[in-house]
Length: 486
Image 1 (tube, rainbow, N blue to C red):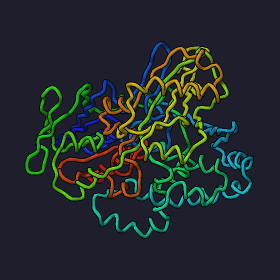
Image 2: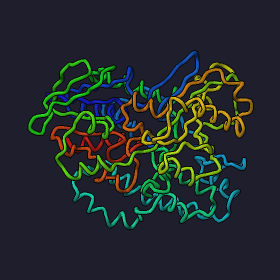
Image 3: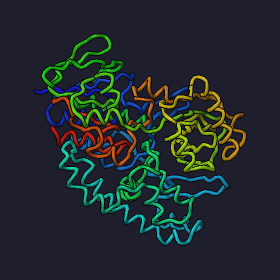
Image 4: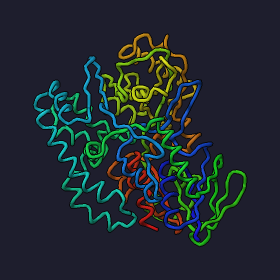
């Protein structure tokens, strides 16, 4: 029986381990955290619960598939609950727009803002479907390590104007700036600037319409526990609290790997779920292909994230499960984050209130939240998080208190945060980026780090920094690519 070692236990790593086990491999999965899940860690502090990573579940068939191939049912392990209001967008003037699971309700909500946009919404959705049919259904699980594969797709990519941004795509169908913001913000959820991310990512609109938006009851942490149980049930070995920091390479192949304690492990194939930039800069330092050198030198990182976790002794029942609070600025904000590397004062916030769906996330009469704010990554030379963190935390609380949550400061009973420094130290994310590489066209498909290593014969890569990209559907699809490569 061939042995495979999976390094990193994010959703891409866990999915890879499960697919390799089904293919007959003896599998060991290794992670430096004390739980599986990678960035999807989970905190439970005095009755308040918080998901530390992804919270939005789309494309549930990708999760179900991993259980089905082992003759199990996802529903026997965890419950995915569909949401009625997918996102509430709150604007600087106090108005809001609800993006709902019902198309007719969504169109009615659009009509309150702009009647022409209500008429054009279905046109946007149908164009999104065309991109989805190609980019997701046909290409998301196709290996792109050969340039010829990329060249064959150029006519289709030009047809969909993939050189245009998500924001420009949205502008073709919508007049209202409010709605343009709401329907172009998705790239930020996978680390990209809507004004620069290829409009291929506009497929997300139809992906959500086709499969819905869900919450895993008990949180994404409970979904991780479901995977952990399945991994144990099928006989995959798990090693936690262990960092792999060296690959021994001979004749272009890995012959063994070493962990932080000096223990050596050997396998036939190695699958990395690490950030590719960290992997190739710090663990593997070979430099023997021009295109590979280019990817390392000129790679553009996603933005960083500041995540504020807090519990309140009051319930804010008017706040939806997923609320996106826009500041006055949009384009200007993104320029500050992605180009000028400046810490903004006029911030936008993704506010997650799991207690809107699952009361177990907080003690009775209380609420649990996390507020996620896009910020520059650690390539910024002027932001010192050890000095700025408390001030930025207070800024988030002030904004939420003023615009959405009266008397918030008095109601907070528990509060802590993560900065880009934590992403670098906990998850070995290069430059503390929240989502590894940014999803530009020139960092997609063949241009992204390959799922089959460019320089090492028996090394394969999965996860956010590889094809097809970040987000739970993306990283789960990268494991599908791996299966085809093997």
